[in-house]
Image (tube, rainbow, N blue to C red; front, side, top):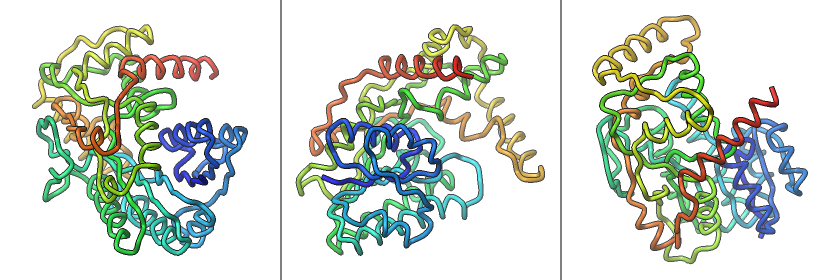
Length: 331
């Protein structure tokens, strides 16, 4: 099987492309940074550079492939709507069109459970519990991108979407590096009572889910799937576990949610007025994520994808910490 992995210079795309090569698949990759895919090329991947915003490049990437695993996209919680729309919706439209024109059999789309987030605690969220209004530009454009993918079914493309929560392991630069940096400066505080439970996903478990999505039969097609480790953990226990592994002091200071949220709102307001609108160090969304319960019901993935999370969150955290220490040692 020949597959295309987009976003392969990023964490999830890169880890899956490497895993696919280890499974003996013929892998073509695309990514924003050539240096980010060098390790994949050394392992035998074919790299075609270029911007997926160009429909012709998307079409060239899809020539002669059986399945596309679409991991590229705009991430974050700060920025202009049009930038998120381009990175998530326009790019996905180009990939979908290219799949149809080049007669690709299947498209596996990496989406996000951020689409469910409403600023309140939510537990056991099912795939159909999509809100009427979205919390931010990232969530709204990720959902729109999903709709573009599912819309291609009527033209014969086999499609699935995966929504993995808080993916971690070696290569993760989105969850913990910023928290480690804040704690080094003693600026990190527990928001609220510190008992909120959230879902994480080992990147190795996500790789298995993506591999299943390449092979599953017709009964699993045309659906979105929540992916997590299936065991919500107290967020601040996880954060402090990482701090211990990295020989940093535990986070022991508490800050009331109301105070933290107000400080974040003020910080955002200042950044909106500042030239160039720099990303705020505190955001209201960040305070909500650090204070609220958030867990997914993964029974659909268990049932239809045969998904069984094998690698524990703690093992994924150990993997991240080992990798991060090696990165820091190299600088």
